[in-house]
Structures are given as C-alpha cells and as structure tokens.
Image (cartoon, rainbow, N blue to C red):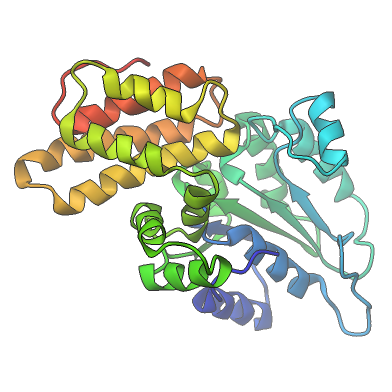
Length: 321
C-alpha cells in the first residue's frame, strides 16, 4: 500500500460513525485525484468488517468487493493476470453492478458485514448508476457502500442524497515535499518544487508528474497559457510531447496538469486576464469529466486542451471539439 498522509479528520469522522448506534450504509469519499482515497477506503472497509473473535485475512478479503475498471479486452486481461501493465475499459459497466448485486443475495463470508468499494464512481455508466441506486435505496442488512469520487457533482443527485459525504482536502505543499523527499532522496529540489507547484495539493499528481517525466509538457502548457499559440507551433509540440497513443493514466495526468496550470496562473493574473482564465479552466474541468466516458481521439483531445490553454492567454483560435 502506498504511503499517504494520515487523513486524521477523515479517520476521526469515520470512527465516530462506527461507534454510533446506526452506521450510515452509503459513503462518498470525495476529493481530487491523488489524495489516497482508495487506500483509505480499503483500510476503512477492513476496520468495518473486522469482528472480535473472527480471524481476518491479510490479503484479499472475501467481504470487501471492489468494482473498478476491467481490462480492455482478453489480451489486456492476460497482461493483468501476468502482473504486467494493462489497458482498461473506460467505464464501470452495469454488468459489474448487477454481478455485485447478485453477490449481495448471499450472507457475508466471515462476519455480519460486507463493504462494496466503487472506484472511481465517477466512471460508472448511466445505467450502472441507476442500477446502483436500487441497492442504495434498499441496502441488504450489513452491507455498506464506499464510493470513491474525484468529482462528486458528476454523481446522480439521487445517489448523493442517499450517501454521507467524507471530504479529503488538498494537501499543503510542505506535506507533499516531505513525502517526496522521503520517497526520492536524490530528487533535485528544483524538479521537486516544479512538481509540487503544478500538483494543486495532490500528492498523487506530483508523483505522476515525476514518474511520467511531465516537465517538458508542463513548460509547453505554461507557454500556451501565457503566450497563446497563433501559429499552432506550441500545439504541435504539445501533441508530440504527449505522444500518439497515450494510455489512460497519462491522458488523465495531462488533463490534470492543464487544469492546475491554469489554476496556478489565476493566482498571479491581472484582473483583465482573470475572466479568460476562469472560462478556460471551467471548460477544462468539463472536458476532464467527459474524457473517461467519451471515446475521444487522443490527438483531438490534446488539440482541445492546447486550444483552451491558448484561449486563457487571450488567443482567438477556436476549439477542436
């Protein structure tokens, strides 16, 4: 399990609820990507299903069901089974929800409680969300749901209304620096600080920045946001830097980097630039929400990101989507 900050406030709220007479059956773990919400969900689920006198397995727990992206196809499934990196489907499908619901017709294996973790709940198909709603409306006895989400507003209002919200705030820069220094003792301070500046309070984003060597992409984005791109040369350079076939993780990191680039620019912008920055930032947030569920061509998606960054600089070229 990856090391994350302690999330003391979240643990305090969770454990107070566990000590109460009636633990809420549905929880939304909300916060930007890269804050450790998934690992928190796993640890919280283990606390919830553990019962006195019943030995608990150290590995996979039979009473903790995790729904996430499945391998893209049989070839990718084979890679997963071999422990290799693999591509995943864009969505959590309704078939996964229905298979989970079938499991819920039986009793938990070890004790009296079972936890279902859906991560990221943002990526459920609409039909999957509607199917899940039935379980949230009439949860089986002893069953609890943890919905990990980066964009809670993207969930159905009826799902949000049936769950208790547990928020994970952005991390202070000093905390991210401490974590990175411990993990990467030979990391140059300038490189570390550049990652932190663009991480927007997300330790996971800072890690991705360093792991994927996004420094060149970050510099191109900063130029687009400050200079515009009337000749489209920077856009072409950005497309080359991202690559012709970026995987899901890289594309998500690029989108997050673009968003945090504009957020950082907004803090230092003059009043006459702020409106353009805010409009472009909002468009990027919407684009990031659509990307997991729409089959965007990577080249066109990068072009749209570049166009929005350039728009923030006052450029007039139109978008591509």
